[in-house]
Image (tube, rainbow, N blue to C red; front, side):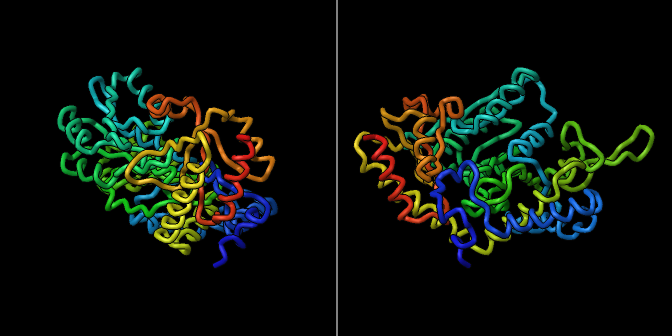
Length: 390
């Protein structure tokens, strides 16, 4: 397969904002366009009925990608949407504990605060290692000390190249019979994901980032252990998540569809399924190795610029590269690069308060590579950054 040929935007753009939204391959674009064209001529419900077999393929395809079964997979509008549905599964009460990390995603942290303020849930964070990343020993000690209702970990934070040891944490949770939620928003499509090896009860992810799918699409994985509990369902289900069986009785869907709603966008589901198939054709191990290599290459190039601090810490780093310089001017610099054909992003303290306070910065340039990028593109991007810095 010719990956760059499948990505026409590569011809006139250096896209280094893959942690925001990657460029979709042609198969994703064409799959969605074809569906919308039929829908415009045929009608929404009628087209969904015509495509029901293709739409249903979403579940076995994404299950294969995660080493799960189709009944473990639920559709979600985004990773955050799926994450909120997972959090709403628990019957929170005063004194319950959520154990998380200092690098968990901002939206997750805000959700924890909401549960704290509304229900009296205690939010505890495990300490980081000096070299970066959560300390598994401290995580284990806090699991024993606090007996948390839930351990929640973001695999790859949005604000740096850190990769958290989610399989090690999963082992700790299995040993202590602790519920475990993983945010894989930045890792689906960037790293191989095996929910059996991770040992998680819930995992959420999006399509738009490294998987190269459409915006407004995501998934939620629920383990068999979770599905075996008829009292584990999202707070406000509808007629997909449950059945109205008697005048005042209802029953929960036995599959992960208990976490779905009736209304969704079939074209987005088809697009995400096509993106997952494309990623499996590229090969998760192949894609991950290429992304890691390009990330390391970019860090080396950036360090050659005078005054640049590369902010990524941790024993395991990925394709997200963050850097700081006294002359960085946030959005102004990002738009200057964009005008010259280089897409990047700026991470601010508001998205990573604890991490950025530790690093002593208010914002950082985020350059996130993908397997369709080239070394020549990185060279050009860094040369432009050097020009901007003057």
